[in-house]
Image 1 (spheres, one colour):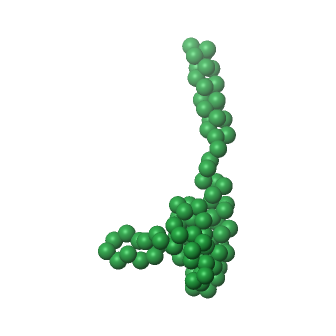
Image 2 (cartoon, one colour):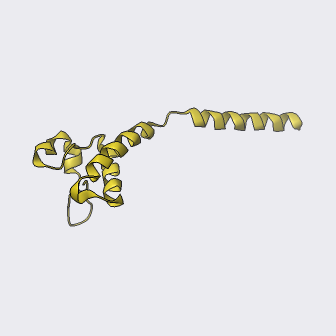
Image 3 (cartoon, one colour):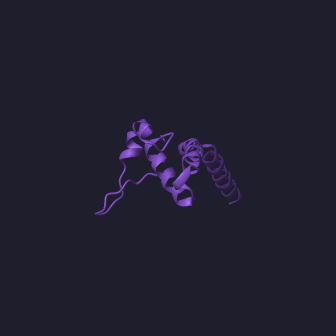
Length: 95
C-alpha cells in the first residue's frame, strides 16, 4: 500500500513539474502586446483600462499593433484595423 501511495505521489509531482515547465505561447505575446498597447493607449483619447483591454485582445489576435493613430499608420496592421464589434452596429473594435 505504501509503495502504491509513493508511486502516486511521485507521478503527481512529476505532472506538476512538467506542467510548470511547458512553454506558454501567450506569455511572450502578452509582454509584446502589453508594451505596444501601453504606448498606443497612452496617447490622447485612448487612455484607460478599456483601451488597454481592447488593444490587448486585438493584439493577441493579430500579433501586431499599429505604431500611431493617424492615417499614415493604418496599413501597418490590417487585421487590427479591420476588426469590428459584434452586433448590428459594426464599429471598429480596436482602439
